[in-house]
Image (cartoon, rainbow, N blue to C red; front, side, top):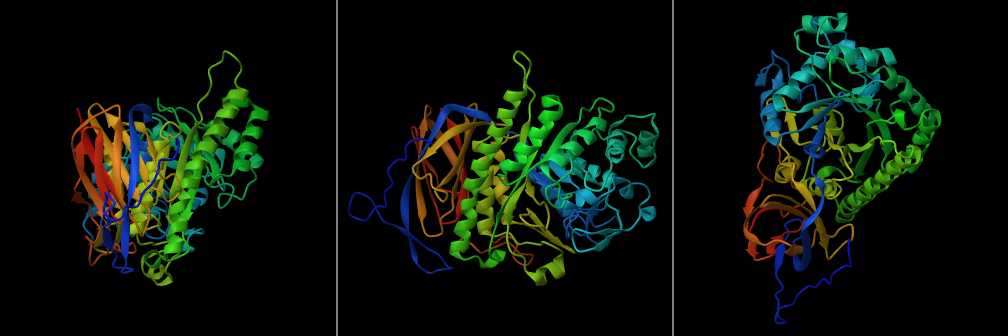
Length: 528
């Protein structure tokens, strides 16, 4: 960000106007403030990969069983056992990549438990999430089928914590070898003669915690061992993803790469380094105080800083360990799990499953701010996966029995969808504080996409966006907003928070619109 521009709150009669909005939750007037934004139409950052809008589904609570998967004999409308409404909505959202089976669950999951005739599969205990029994009716074939139905690339998280290198090696062969081996023929006998061609393979998950409580050095030794056996079976080169830090833990990153560098150098480096970053909340979702909401939304500035710091660390190791004149390996940075993590409501968990969490207007703005961060740092990131897809934590869909609803966060992702595959542009704002206006911009040819988030509960933002190096011809916008930041979509009232057309004006190189408190808007601008 460059020099901060001046910020003004106008009063009537002084050449500007004071106007207000009434918030139902507080009942007071919120003054409007001018927000100056500059979008540099020729200052390109990098392509916004669709993979930055990825998702994550773990065997946790009712994310999979009862959420995505209801079974072929269920009275819930389904497609081959998958909840039809969820399939339709996830396909509409266009999830580019889906990570499975965990999470913590991954390092206690043995893939052979989830293949073969469903009635012959063993019943196993989910030790991480409630010690309940799973019948393993949802396994590798079901996951791949779900990915095909919604158009997502599959991403499998391998078991390092309680598994073996052979187990992971055999899973790769089972999924990817075309035919002729015992494992590929077993896959064919189980109903899938064509290989799954899975590219993305996680080598463990949160191994600093639930994945084994390992030291970085010990995990680095295990990573080296496991990666040795993960091979190209049938032409699909595995993209191997190592367990990165919890938030911006530079100690974990340094010690892991120091250990790898000492034992073999950059030839052993992973293709991907997966950071996890949750924005924790002190309140239950629908009862956030202003103070705790401000604290949670401020964490996205920390997320952006963590991306910059971790990317810099990875680059420093690659530079230091690559001999002059030799090509440098690429170690891509992922935010493998992210989103808001509020306090749970025990009664809701009893009804809907562990970590079941409602998504409010606040949650939607948080999703919008996170995606804005990823767009602004598009040159530093490879993949980002919201946690999680259905019912659990920062989900885009809530489902229970015959009920299914799109959350406010679903619509936040939908509003950001036009950015995918466009080129991110440099933006500047007059307020660079953690709760200043959040902006991202992207362009392809004569189409410019702008997303604005207002994270303030007591200020309506009057946005004046200057297009540097471009001129606008027309624009259309949609707004996601509600006067109560604790409002949410429920099974009884599913359309409390939905996008609506929103006034936006263009004049030459300026785009103007207003943002109510705790809201987000995407404008699609046609350039001259």
